Length: 111
Length: 114
Image 1: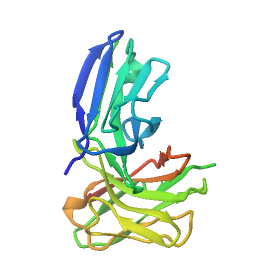
Image 2: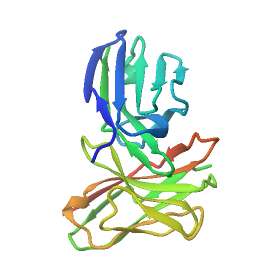
Image 3: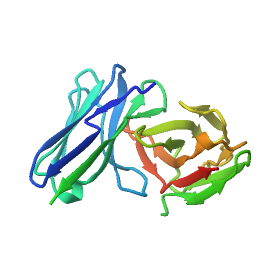
Image 4: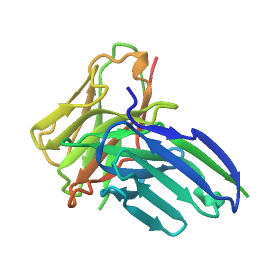
């Protein structure tokens, strides 16, 4: 059973456009992480959010954790070809050390 | 620091063969995990460990065994390989930083079972 649903699954946009990726669940998480994965490599951590309502910004990327800690979003402003990759969210199950990953969003930014 | 290392990078097995995927980390992390990644399914947790001598099952543990005799090493054993185990396997380690458990991943092992 997939506890974390990501949308959209695929996204192809032009350089300079903005986009938002969503990560939704009916479960409450202790924390939520976003990763980016390049072909042939392991995922690389972008950010961890812990507090409900928390917003974190990394340059052109803005991450938000839902107030109820069940969902999250990743917003990219003025996308660049270097943003191309597979974006994964991962929730830490409460009271455990288990991470549940979302299904992933494959982003392609065209020059 | 080498971070998280995995060997081998590629492996082809015949149905019924056994093998061990190696994972090591040099960051003195308490927690280590094994995931498999299949197209369109993100990463699924196979087994994890919260310290030497302590392991537990994840979402998809059947057909896999683990042990954690040292903090550094967390091998994954396939007892009798099946085509359904064809996948990319990732090992990860993490520490707890005031609730912000940061996971670091190895480069992966690409396994094909014929």
